[in-house]
Length: 615
Image 1 (cartoon, rainbow, N blue to C red):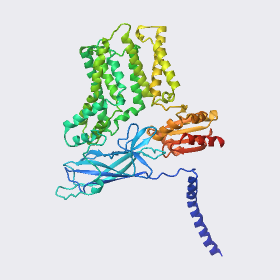
Image 2: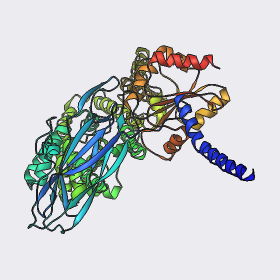
Image 3: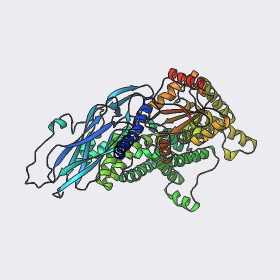
Image 4: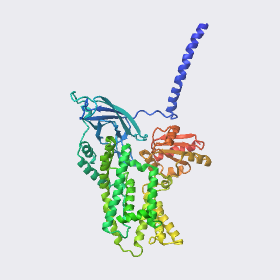
């Protein structure tokens, strides 16, 4: 009997162990079916590299094809993707003896997205081509290329956070006596190396000019790219700043205005040359400089200082000894023009056109900083032609009648424009400036009224340096109202029409407020690159019925645009698989409801009614 008992006891222990192992899995599966546990995300994208030849000889050229498989129901942004979207991009290694040339991305399929319009995307299977040159002194040995693919996967409801996957491509370098055979021809059949992109840009031509030794053609194409960039909308904010510097100068003649404009453009040129080479040498993206809050704050501080100087609050002067020295070459105007040019170069940084992107990639992959400097110099010079023309002929404004303080009026208007531009830059890093903007007729009516009252009180025919006492206070109040009204008009146009929620931008602060006021909480996880997040703002939260219900909630908006320790902690705490994610909680922090992806106003109202009825 004892033996039989021991035998059954062993079987019992085995069954108990198996139950212990399988029970959590079964329970987790059941919970997942009820939406209580987040289901693990399947792999959305794979990448594999293929060579055009079986072996590579020193001094020869070969190609790499990257075949990207995208999971069914998902898509990634094309390259180029459009403003505010994250390109699907091959990131190339810095490999000795190999020079990467043209990267050929396929043309994306245009997808209609309500919040941002049309956007090109990739789905199913795509192939990306890369031109590679092996140097004459490449060692006869095998090597492995470590490539990366940076992308952002989205479906109809949600955009996952941007990811980077790594993959390798083995390359065998052989002597010139070895027999080399082409392979994978079917993979390379649809890649048009050397053909200009369908968008009509000069990117492909520039890459071929750089890799083919046609330096003169490369400089010509870069110069043309700079001119085209100067015509893009993100350069427009520099126009009133340029006019304010030169047009408000009463004593400047046509020739002096031309010289000041040239010096101003040289400031842009120097900024682009130095910053472009520095950023490219570290593999960073030039346009992302303006995403740094410290940079935005510094630029805004300079703009505000320039605006105040236009009002006559103070004069921006160099030290007396330096000023006397500069008087021999035209006075402080030239130094000021050059300094403002360096600032303008940073403000225009987001206007990185195709030509600039190719130059930066070329500098980063080849290490040719000397050539890169002069290419960037040429690009910025092309972009500066517009400002030379504006600065030169803006000086003719001094020929207008001067009676009645005309030039003071001009200076004050330019000062209002410059400080308004500073606020516009700050709104992306200082939430309260963004939070109160609305796109509605009453809001615009108030803004217009503030501008009119501000101009009436602002004593535009006077400068601060020439008035005192109560008149100075009146002028200050008037200018503040005019700046606020102008900012409301400019910023409000870009906001979604309809009601505006009162957002809290800090999780801890929002939860404490909810507990203190005994209110429900809505956590909205968003990012600037998330199209569905923008749809929530423009369609769902702007719906009057939804906004009325959410007015009784503590609404917390958490920015996941850039990764940080805070976003990583929140991702782990709330298990954020992708964006947008909306979580409803009670005042004690208990989760009542959550959903991922865009929901229409009708669905949101249903969710809110369900939450309130369950309380």
